[in-house]
Length: 418
Image 1 (cartoon, rainbow, N blue to C red):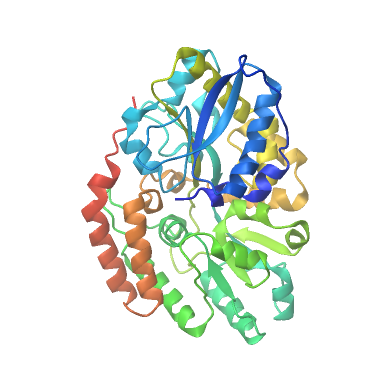
Image 2: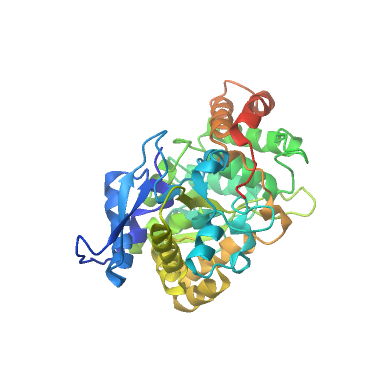
């Protein structure tokens, strides 16, 4: 499994730096990941900034081996989060690491929506939400102008998306609308944004209500009409949109950072569409992404280095750089304020769109099918069956809920680290 989409290539290009160490002076700390070779090289530049600022520790990237023991630092994807929680005995709670090392860490300073699923019952952080985003709608302004649409008035509702897709199609677009991360966008966030639950109070999945069924049936109709083009379960749609092939894209808010300078100028960022025939909409979306975990079994001096690296990541200036280049949501209010004062206009607009969607209790919903890998795979299999016309929307979602609930206890085991 790759983490490539949550650490976009552009994120680390700004973070150049090199370190010079004495082989005997620095203590090595390993950071495990599942990046491809190109993005691993770019992540190494971020690590180099930390390494260059002090000579006590040297963080080194290592590729994670499935089933292998955790390293000092471990970068987990959204889909891996439930696996990491289930293996809680292999990780040391972050708040404990920071306290023992004498490094400050106030979980309350981090935005609440970024802490969901990463804190214990007392609100203490056991992992750090380093690269989070929330789904938004991107539009290709040039394609909108060609179709006679106003690029400064992007669609607000799914009905307006359909009307825009119709005009884009008539104007010759081979991809009027597409999406990345289907389970995250069209189950987790479609549900919370439109005020319907993904699971009941006991954690049993129930994302097969009328709202979700109608939404999937709508997308199936679009797929038949070639208004909606589905590429894959991850981020191929991002690349197609960035290449100018598609008129509209729903994806993580951080995708804006991967666009080149010219494409950014002609890309609009607006809130995720909603269904306006429902009461109290739009409600809230949810944030998710990559988190940083600390392995057990280290020496005290190694944990001190880990804590120092975490403090480095929490510095407002470092977070501004991450937001500028990676599009990720700043973790603290101080970092968000710094980003707002230093980012370019378009970047600030995108950041504000993302944050405005996260206001409200729905953003704190703890059950997210996209974070439970076994359930996510089932859901995306059934969504593909719907969009390809092999099953009706109701059949597919009913089966997805039934299959998902069958694996849910083994997939979750949500006892949080103490």
